[in-house]
Length: 335
Image (cartoon, rainbow, N blue to C red; front, side, top):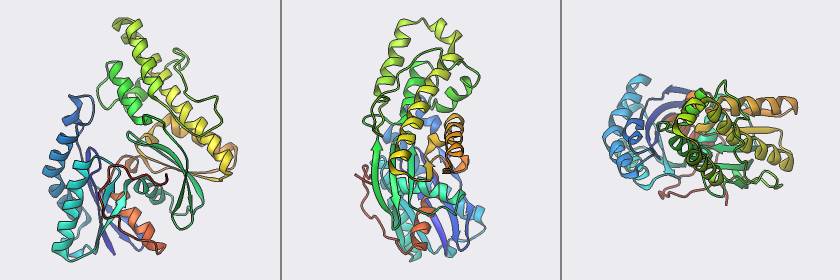
């Protein structure tokens, strides 16, 4: 079968064409709305929805063309129904359902978070549950246990903000442009990670929950008590310290979850999984403790259409393909 995957949950308009036997990504173009939102320092839902309306048809056409097929060759469509921003989700869902009706093929609504895990599966097709998952992005930070049959159990999640959102908002406070995650990593690559002792929330608690609101407050207070010239002069060390605080929290809570669940496989997904320091820290721990680490290649870490099609294919191969038809901004894998 040939699948068209459609992702529009936030600020990337993405479509991809995949075949499911054998599983292969034939195309995976996307349009990033970074320039539209940079002026505001974050994603504006109304602007995002309008951009999706303008770009989704040309991106779908590009996906089909790059795959070397015609629309008539598509056998099924997978699209995101949540979680995400309501306006952008509705654009993608409406387009998918309309196209499926015209082509007289089925359309399956998929969970965006399952898509991030399926991205790791595309890179590591040998993985089989049970395993622990860490989904970490601009909108999500959670640890979930996946067992056979797509049975999910929540191990821990953020009490407030997501790690990716913390990168962006702290970067804005430091005078960096949106999105700030990659910039913080680049500026802090050779910096002193102990230059500022930013807080690691809940680090003394034996649980698997995250919190990043206090870190944002700490960065705000730091900018209020240090001059712009001082911050600019020491931006590399400050960024290194900030990145270390976020990565420390992610790694320490993931290690706690691995110990509690006794899992020997860790699957990581989401845009922040592209962070080099996070990857290195997790790789070091997993290698030392005999744990298999599965992280998607960087091109599949951020939102993309391939991961949504892959989520449908992964369920189809296990005889568990069902459609989530209702668009919902809040759609956790497990409560």
